[in-house]
Amino acid sequence: MSFDPARFRALFPIFQAPFDGPALHYLDSGASAQVPQHVIDAVARQDSTARANVKRGVHRLAEAATEAYETARLAAARYLNAPSPREVIFTGGTTGAINLVARAFGDTLGEGDEVLLSVLEHHSNIVPWQLLQMRRGIRIAVIPATSDGRLDLDQLDRLVTPRTRLIAVTHCSNVTGALTDLAQVVAAARGVGAKVLVDGAQRAPHGPVDVQALGVDFYAFSGHKAFGPNGIGVLWGRARLLEAMPPFLGGGEMISHVSFEGSSWAPIPNKFEAGTPPIAPAVGLGAALDWLAGLDWTAILAHELRLTGRILDGLAAIPGCRILGPAGLQQRLGVVSFALDGLHPHDVCQFVDATHGVALRGGHHCAQPLMESCGLVGTVRASLAPYNDDGDVDALLDGLAHAIGQLRG
Ligand code: PLP
Image 1 (tube, rainbow, N blue to C red):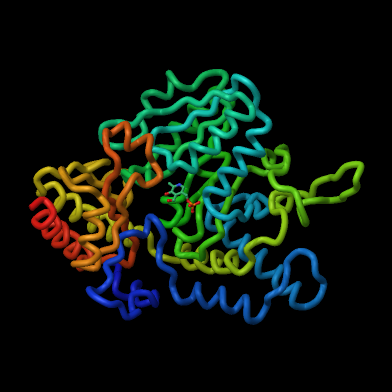
Image 2: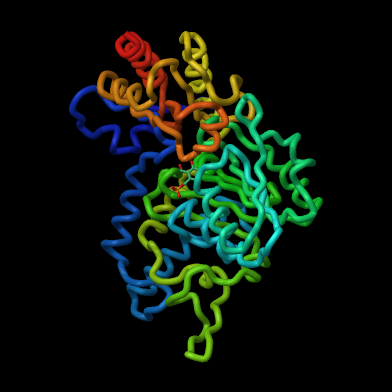
């Protein structure tokens, strides 16, 4: 079945909103995806019909709020094919999820233990480990990238050692769009008894994930990139690991008993959800994930990749354009970064926004180590979602041609 982006697009009020200037061509879904009306409605319904605190009250509203919140947890568990909803922890986003692991799992590591990252990581999968390094004296090792912007997994043999405790890598680079072959990473980790954490921020919005088939230990993603609200995200972790980890934040609801002599912890997932959680955002994310799970991803990915191919072809025809990432369409998603000789990415982004209504991202994309390894301060990035169509690609390529004509003088 072919996919109709116009029908999909009609679900999103932002594309009907009036704008000053040119019509909106939104090619920045990798930063934040737009939100469909039914997700906006789910959040509003929660706040207008069932607003109360969760897990503690016994009145009707409190029970309704708790049920809605736990139903959202079930949706996240289904989306990830998690063995149990107890393994799903709501966080503020991918950043919150990785910091939770770096703190709680990290506190089980010691001097000389190694965490293996990659040069493709977002800062949120680098800095938490550097903070752990400062606290616990761990070592950080880094998988380099290949010339086409993938993790250089041939280096795993050299980099994975008997001291490796965790390999923390992205499922899809937010700069190059390359998908990681997690099977190779998991095999290397298992060889030395290490765990695997996956940053799924860019991959999770493009269809359900099967954490059991992937064989990983932790999986993190953000609601706002997956057509859900801001301020909500998910950490999935294997029950036995989560149970063995100390809590990250202390407060209400994460305890079993508190006294001044000492406290004991609630079972998972509550142990890792201290305080009042983002209830309506969780409900909205649940609605988004249930809806995403029912879409035809074979058709959608074919659509996104066809547009990606058009962008890659258009960029390849521009003199002085350097594409970071795979030149082909295998094992990648619709994230395309490029640098234009002599032009600053911010100038390009502002120009195409003002003249052609194209929303792009320009800068280091929170991936400064990758930028530095490529000898760049930043790139322009186009990132696709199912609502994008040929008109968006035309506007992008026209806008770039104009920008180059005007800005390169
Ligand atoms: N990891 C990747 C690959 C990302 O693209 C992003 C956001 O751009 C993040 C992590 C951080 O996500 P958040 O800011 O939602 O926590």
